[in-house]
Length: 154
Ligand SMILES: [Zn+2]
Ligand SMILES: [Zn+2]
Image 1 (cartoon, rainbow, N blue to C red):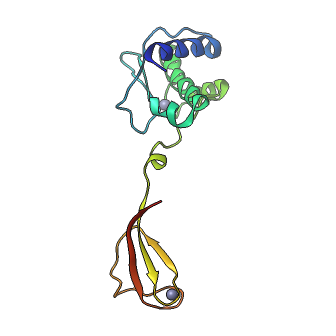
Image 2 (cartoon, rainbow, N blue to C red):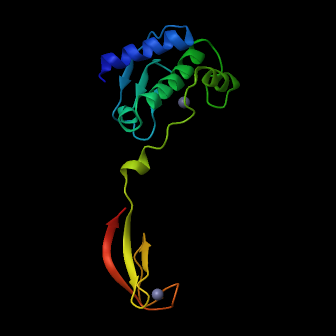
Image 3 (tube, rainbow, N blue to C red):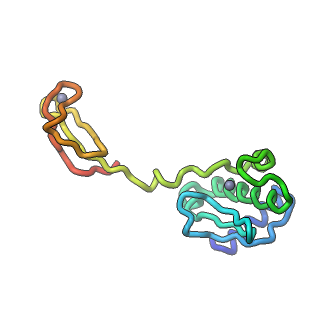
């Protein structure tokens, strides 16, 4: 989806679900990292995160568009446009916007672990932090632990 298609999408959702035109600009902003979109109070422009579309698909992205349009229309019409406001909550529910975007972090950030193994019972342990094997023993059999491999991503 390019900028022009994004603009058209926001305009059509605005008419269809809010029965009001969107008269400002919608742009993809690559600086948005963990949020799906942003409404600018002073310029009334909307920014969107292309990653939401790429990661979660169109349905989720439309939910974000509706969420930002709730801020937009309520702010311009003098309603309660903040997350805590009753007006916002009511409108969001009415149009089926998303309350928050699923976190963008966990899916593209793998966790790395240190792998230890008990020499006696061969039980494997995965730990985020490295520890001194002289100071800890196997939780199952009290056997001696050895560092088996470094940093496994999973
Ligand atoms: Zn919001
Ligand atoms: Zn053991």
